[in-house]
Length: 493
Image 1 (cartoon, rainbow, N blue to C red):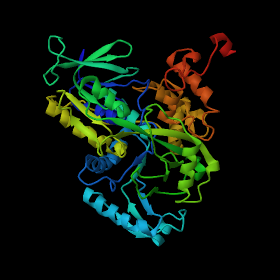
Image 2: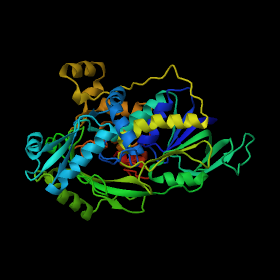
Image 3: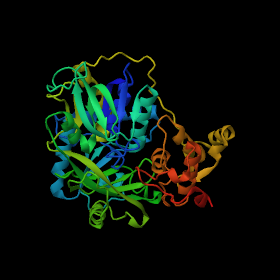
Image 4: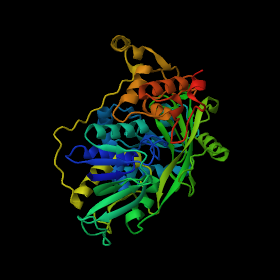
């Protein structure tokens, strides 16, 4: 089979495009080297929907940040993804930073951000009383928001599957060739033809068009078929997640004035009721380095104290590190590759990439059309996705649901109040979970203060039962992360 479009990379950018292409009569493949979607930059980030005051006017970052921000409320409602437009507060810590607030206000206004307002220190204390009294002023950005980032990515990909797309997991690309209609290798890649994408396991698929959305590996993917046009480096950031007892410390997402290294350390509620603090910024070369360090976490703690001295890090329940895609230029790389007909690059999508993803997807569809892809509407396209979150239901709704399906009456994760019914749903969905962390990313068992100490074994048993496999074959996360060792009989005893 030859797909119309193959998207390489199942992060939020690739998954957003995958769903968008479901609106047309196309055969589309979403290709991912890992065993699930959202396992790169999209799994570990600040989960912020940025307002758009920061990117320089006229850049792709500015355009797609603002456009994407406006798409989030409707899109998250359609996909049943947790989202809250809580607003952002960018604070000046010194008098010297006050002029920067005005510059951000003017820049954001030029970018089309609505509702921006510069306020003084008295207003800041009324808005966020737990910030330091030494804060001198702030820029209020009411269109800022927070989202479940991996829930969003997974929902996009799942909706793409429902609308006819195919997700190819465990499919690491190692070679891309361009062939003519007779299957002969083309030396001149500007000529019309099709692509053969070869995977690490030796299998391959063909596609008329390729979209390179491979995140921090997008430079490597581009060079499998084209002349080197850009490079992407990883920038690591470390975070604290704090217990829900800290979740109401601030209502808005609190930023420092941005610097050349980014938006600085933030303090923000999450859509799940926790408090998030971080990140730092460490440039490096290791694209698989998700380690946390004492130095990085100490930096985050110390910097956060400039914003508020009321964060109780004794309530930290988890640390993590995420990688951002840092291009060698200053803007997103969104282009038709000039040396390879039919190749579209969506690369170097650093912050505000999560916010920009829906708008980038729309633009990428147009780039594919410019490459020659025919777009015929899919009359059966279904934009909606429903998901039950038992803890958010009313008592009456809970009783009705349990009467219909008793599995919803069995709480498996006490911290997050996740039921067996929700876990079974996560496994049985069109792009169902196959590992403990895949379940966690979809419906949150193991995300609370005990971090799976209570519910982990039960989730493993449910996975084993639902998938019809031995418990020893269940993995925690990526391939190789097996939880149980020993023969089956001994394990069950």
